[in-house]
Length: 175
Length: 175
Image (cartoon, rainbow over all chains, first blue to last red; front, side, top):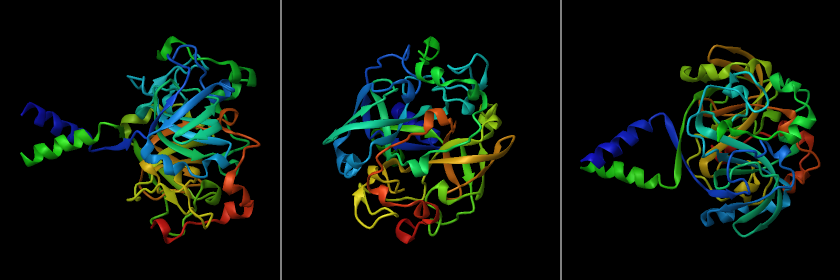
């Protein structure tokens, strides 16, 4: 009966939520959140491997024709999302949706990485900026014509230079 | 007892899955998947509104400083994801991960839209290419320095011209 109650509680809690399948995991050299790059632009040529669950392998057909892919994954080590955060690249508090902080509701991460090679259910990738074993939710081909934007207003990030972008690392804050 | 079994089944099925909160909904003029634009680039200046659940409203602080945001949402009308699809912009079958087809595992959509204005928990946006009432999962600020890529290999999409991109609409295929 205790298990039954727990199960019903689980269903009740899912009312305003959706369930997503983990379609694979991302293997990377980053074993802890400290001192890792905060974006693919700061992780140039760092190698990783997507291990896709074999069930989905037919979905990879034609992917080798592209050089870059968009990954959607979960920032699984985050335990306490916050609505206001002090992001890595600044010293004052911002609304979390105005930052790329991992401490966000749903803990979703997006990274654009480069394909090195594909071998059955393994995609060898470059520019990895996520923690080892991040649960993968989707892979999309990057298409410049759809995905680039120009002359955008960059908000508080506008102060950050190209140098920052390539060298900024995370710190203990989200460890 | 029947309910209990159903509940346990639900938990069992969630083993390799994650649960995400629906943080809001996206209101758009697109009430059915037929003849809607397939990307924001094909929906220039089409207006929509994000209605964020009020719980999350403090997360919007500073967002008005940015002109563009990345939305992650669910393509909720899709009932049968497929591993191989004939995408809108071509006539032959491709692996779904090499396309932007909505019929993908986890039915996740990404759109980069422009902010028109923000009023409490409502974000008025432009360039909307998603179906009305799409469940929203995340909002991130678009940051050119992180998010643009150049000289990418565009795979089978390379054949598509700028004209295609702006005029291509969906058809009955995913209706």
